[in-house]
Length: 471
Image 1 (cartoon, helix red, strand yellow):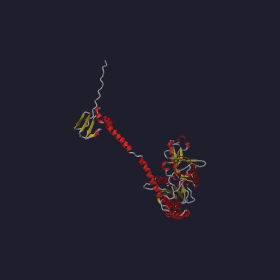
Image 2 (spheres, rainbow, N blue to C red):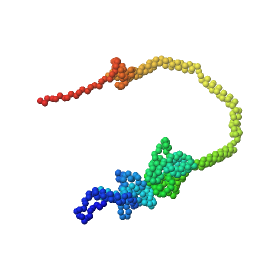
Image 3 (cartoon, helix red, strand yellow):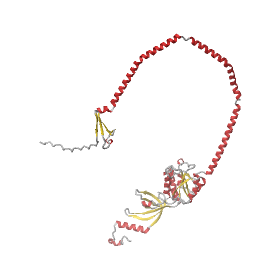
Image 4 (cartoon, helix red, strand yellow):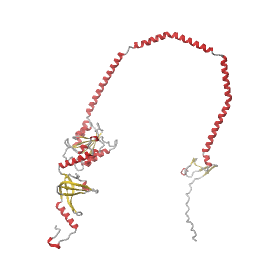
């Protein structure tokens, strides 16, 4: 399409509007190029609040503006980062509002292994600077976990190898969280699986794992790239459950290996690191039991020998009892004379005591006791009367206090007691419907045959104030 006529025609040239020119340029650009693939280095990257992404792809001379709409961003397998070598695919178009052309990108791929490794090193430095690789934050692997959570593909050979190895070494309960292990959905699914296992409640219907294994077989760096994504590394670092990474073969290294609590060279090795060998534990337990029995027998033998040695050092029983027997024999010989001497001393003491007793002394003590009894007997009525009078005064004081605190005195101050069906009613709702009501005053009681609530008083209508005379 010719936008202008022959320039030699002068005033005969056709006039176009700005919108017509912009639309013609856009149609020509889109029709000429269609979908194109462009290789270059990513410049600035801006993600707007709307979710649209704007970035530049440049070489040593020129720069190409690129736009990826919100719906296209979620489908990108690789998100562009500044300095990354990429190959972008999209459709050339133009934006007449700013007289600019740009590439609407719907696919981003890293340009070669070197670019991938450079981006990986950049991410490693960033995460290392945040302390996510520090050995102090890594958690110990449990010796014998009850439940093991495995995050891998449910259809590959990896899960079969892990289950087979666990069954051979020490069978454990295994929860498998199926995920994609390569491609666009790999990184978000693995991150969600790690977070999902950590979100389980201990002791719930589905048991929370004591150990996690993230596993995948070997492959190229592009196949394993999902485990180099930042969301996977951060999810593994934030896991409260100890995590073993087993991605690829022994020579493969991914970003999750640096943040996990332990790295296994292969998925089978991860299963070996997870549990001990049951037969080895049984043999060890038998060995420890045999050693304990041998040690116990040896200890008992040593103690018996010690007792025998001490027994030889002790004196004979007859030698220990001989002095006691001799003392007993001497005591038996001295006993009759000692008894006779004691009886004689008791007789002397009795004679001395009996010599001091006189009838006149006993008679005088008896008369003094009788006089004291007669005096107390004569004073007893007076003491009883004083005691009774004191108790009567206390009783009168208590009775006056009872009357003062009783409800009768309250009635005298203008109050009344309302009873319904023999019970005191303190609130309106305590009065049963159609019940007889008894009201007690200070001077008597009255009985009301039927208690009905009083109608609410009507408010009088306000009367306007009288108008005074103005004269």
